[in-house]
Image (tube, rainbow over all chains, first blue to last red; front, side, top):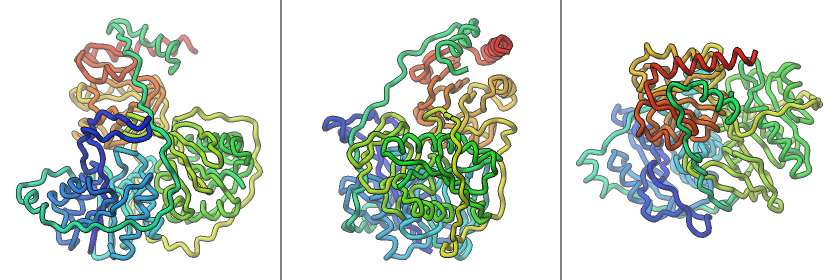
Length: 247
Length: 327
């Protein structure tokens, strides 16, 4: 069984966000990029565990992005992925990314495609479901447990107001959430091996540009925190009632 | 040509996020000179009436038990068939668990531009639509222009209060053909979260949340009582869920769920950036913490410094007093 894990290259969680070109571009100056945490901790690590349990033969990373994202892909190699594909393009939205990943996956035969539940950059939660749409495959979102037996996946996942255990015959696409696996730290052998693992660069297929970003705006912070004396909870309740008007 | 809105029934009621989506669809229809059609599966008369009151001129009422499994492949096929029948130019979903798995799939099928998690009504930009959404986990917003002929928008829950009017929708039965859809997902087991009578977290307008500062699960009684008195929903921080003091489904933050209630009361939570990413969309934030240096105070509207074990009971009494005066 072959697993394809799609990873995104995102600014570290603690990044101070800034924009350039008249607020139309994300300013990458001085920004530390990482593998999108959900793609890494939940999708990639679970895929590696399945390989270690001899339930998968190969774990391949795929990323849609320019050459400057290769360091991020190699971090995935250091964690244990076998090889990687970089689709050499930058797109405006999830549609572009998913179409590129689907086009590659269709001709290369993967049994399981795994993504994180969302990226911490554009927060769309869209790429996994879109890949499944382009490939006409079943999709299970917010998976918190996954096991494979021959060609059947057993998953636990979050649904509205509860959880569900489902079975699905492969191939399929899964979005992964907390519970799937735990974050790993790459060991020295992994880091050394990462340099020489095969990373194939593939040109992008033609794609429709359906959306574009017109402008960015930093969110307004809170004005100032009004401090209330701990012995005056009547005042707090009064403020919540008359000033904030929330109770 | 119409605006099509996917609506959903949960626990015998039209989901609040679905009513918000119908309201949103009505605004979009006004903007582009069109009319709103809702699609709903297995709804009764009262539920259909409520969808009408939210602004749907027409409702496609689908009766099909195959759709109960909530498989995005099947729901997507149903909405796709409705979109074709209606000649829909804009298709609106709630940005909830169903919307997150169906809207992108539909966008792929229809070659439609998608904005996932819209926080405000769109504005017209020629034949295109400009739609605002949160990016970088709430640190910023971006305005996307959707250029494609057919557009898909999913709306972040609690972005606008639900408005119900006196509109009555024309209801017509809509038959869908799932013959060509090869669903392979088989449900083996289903468990409901034990939330009692509380409103589910993603829909809750008032949330009382607590963290490690409470020292142990045995101390949650006062949190639950405060929540009950306010008719709020309880939540918790990540360490609390990881230590199994509280159930996993209560965990709000970057790895848990993101919420945007009107009021978020954080008790004994320091306010790590990962926690803030899940709650910074809340309209009003109250922070109670014994550490005056807790970073959460910088992201709060009201702060109380002191021991939660003495403050929360006092807050509870003050809330009870307000409730008594209101009655």
